[in-house]
Image (cartoon, rainbow, N blue to C red; front, top):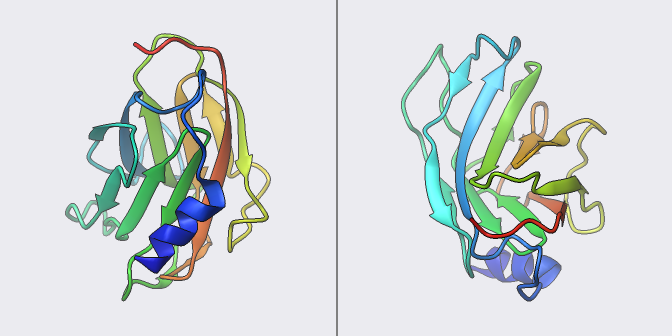
Length: 164
């Protein structure tokens, strides 16, 4: 609970026009060496962005020897915070992509960009680990050590895109 309070302190922002609050999103894990032939495709978990945690992912079942690492995802108005629960630690394998995909259900280009908040994250990511495609945000954590003291904070630059 203290970790969650710290995450809110790091990134707490009021809802603003052009932000992520009240948007509908699906979230899931993805791993691939070849994008057209994924190693792992996690279930899509829908939510509406609001105060509090949107997702608490847990194992979903093995695919090609892979499964979900439990994680906690808090989507804020201008940021996404990834943390990991007590008792969970290790290092993510490093295929070409191993991470999370947030798909905001809108017809417009939602993001102008996204980047790691280096001041509030406890890990560093490669320069190309965070990228956007229209209304999708990708966060590649391949090779990153994870555990209960790890925070990955992604700041997003949200375009002026109406809620759908």
